[in-house]
Image (cartoon, rainbow, N blue to C red; front, side, top):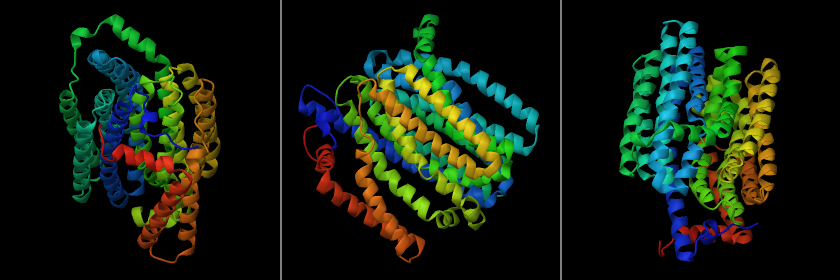
Length: 495
């Protein structure tokens, strides 16, 4: 199945308007992609330093704090992002009120969730340096959810460039502070303080950026009835968001509880590498969701989803191939030989996760655009049962490798459930079509990686060249509409 061109991606009354909307969508995606890429590079840089300068138990404690903070973040997050973007895109004049209501509710939920968590951490760690560091990292995510909400408001406005800049500043400042703390001997304690400081800087930057796109806090527009209406609209989505947010983090928390911080460090090394590329799915979802929200019942919604799925496959299939074929070499190069043997199989088992996550994420956006909240909830609940059951069985037996296998199987199950649910509302994106050309090119990449004796950097460069060239040739031969869409979107013409 070929891809839609720009005029088909976004239904409009005139082709010029459709092309302009498509270009704006792609420009927002490009800005978000660039910011996330730079931000992920900065984060990955300090994680690499941390794996080498912290001992295995300290890195395990840091990984636990990051996983717990990311899990807690979904309590004040509560699915408000989906509702804020959906309502703000559909009713731009009411965005300020929706934005203010969202922040008000998040502050209340955040105080409850983070207050409870910090109290429990205090009773567990006491006033130790490890306890202070863990608390600082967890608290940093409470600030990050406020920054994320500001980015959601900009997404609803379809003006993301300023937010992209604020995100880059936050990640770079955090990286500089963390690396400085580690290299100066500050250890885990000052690493936690540096991460919290970076989140403070990020919150200030996002506050300036959201003001510049014309979104304002309107406390006078907040009413009890409005807050109740927001909660009524989000309770199913909120529970779903909590469940979905727990899926990739349950493994980390359970490893820490069952096998300890050293085993968690083994898992975290592989998971950090996999997590680094998930931003591609986030950015693509942010680009297509306002379009799906504005035109949820258009027959071409399936093509919009398929466009995003193909774009994700182009990135994630070669990533999975490299991680599968060269797992020990990649981990040894990035994190040091102490993790090369311990984490290699964990990385192989996690390698499919980004692709499965991305495809499921786009289908979830399709359900959200149709306001199929009940379907979102039951598919998430089944995925949680699968994840929890597999983790409880496999972690005691296999440790980090069991958690990795549980994660990949969970996202495969969720993908099948979401695809089935979306077909019931009349949107029928194909799953095999988006994978065909990138999959064929990835097979050629695997042959190169397995057969060419060369140093790892040279091998990756050669394999990357073969993948890009073969994917382009196959697309030109079998799916020319994909190339036409790129040319029309980025080429000269009226916007």
